[in-house]
Image (cartoon, rainbow, N blue to C red; front, side, top):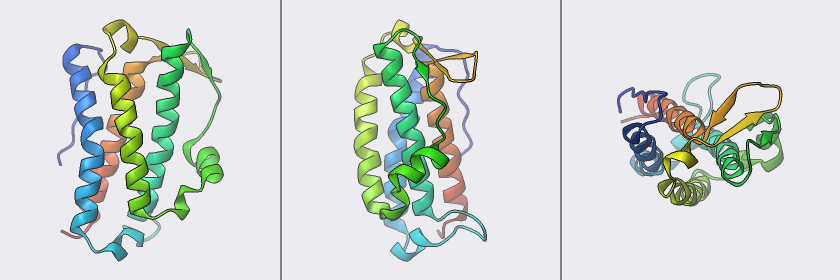
Length: 166
């Protein structure tokens, strides 16, 4: 995997790139899991770092917040999102850290299928719909949120790939 960026400008080409990255994440996670011994999934990648399972739990939490913000942007006019943190709030409540990698992967894959079903049918105007987070004045579009999630996942995939045994 190589480091990839997607421009901030909302264009049809950039939307396609975001959708491609979002669609590839579950496939790449499944391929990684299939290519390494199961015990490696529960071992830290390096001293003081997360395990691959904890990385996936983190991705599940961040995806949940992103998907929620996109859903709200599409259903309401510039909704105000509560200030929630993927780990400190969602992670402590949902406790995905107690799930296995395969359980998390199945859940993540299903959620991604649903998110892509929504995103695949959006018009340019819908991609431009916005949300605002509590405590922030800046508004972010559906495109911005989806792009941010895709790039966030790519960073974690690149990190996993560079540290997992080949």
